[in-house]
Amino acid sequence: MVDEESLVSFVAGGGRLSAPDNVTPRYRGELMRLMAIFVDSEMAGASGFADCINLAPGLKERITATRIVFDKFNHARQVLDLMEQFGANTGQYVGAHPWASRLDRSVNLGTRRMEGDMRLNVFHYPINGWVDAVVMNCLMGQATVVQLDELTRGSYQPLADILAGILPVEKHHAELGEKGLEAALERGHDKTDAQASVNYWYPRVADSFGSTTSDHFAQHRKYGLRQKAREELITQWQSHVYPILSHFGLKAPVPASREIDDQVSLQ
Image (cartoon, rainbow, N blue to C red; front, side, top):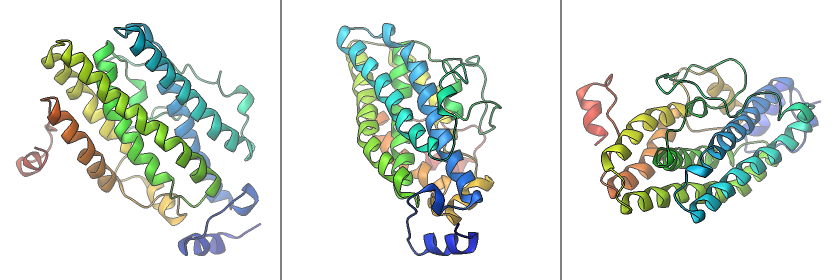
């Protein structure tokens, strides 16, 4: 088995690992954590969005929502199959957590992780109606695209390849969220209500990029699993969502805790 120093040197030079036998225990731990976060988030995201299918205003929208749910479960399956190669007990995975469970709407976890499954915190919050669902899908869809694009450059080649195949589908999901919001506003949905959904989901989606003080990012960079820090990824995400929101006459909320100069930069 490869030693830690050799592995770090190999990936620092742009090397890609191809099988479980090629990794060290520490690398395996960080890789498994990344995969578990992805799988759990897809499982929870699909399960929560499944409850929204019957909220859709028309048959076309219900078919679209059903397809998104199918795709997300399928994405979870693909990465779960990869985890199985590392010894994960995938047979009991689906029933391991109540994936559709949600917290009270008033709760805000920030970047604090809850015990239990590894879903991103944004998937602990409940969806309140169809427009709330498409706003969430629009904002989180763009965040998923940014996060997955980063992971497709990771040093574990089998995972990078799977995520490269998933990325175009997630891009389409984000576009569907945008189209769903556009259709709702064209039907006359109250823009103030849509803005309230943006105000609710925007900071929670931003928190999905993690904490600036996370110890895991240093390890991910060391092992070549990720390179871009939280701030760079959020800036990339904002470059996508700001024009979308502006197109609909909506805007990102200004965090109350920021200084005035920081607030101006968000406009």
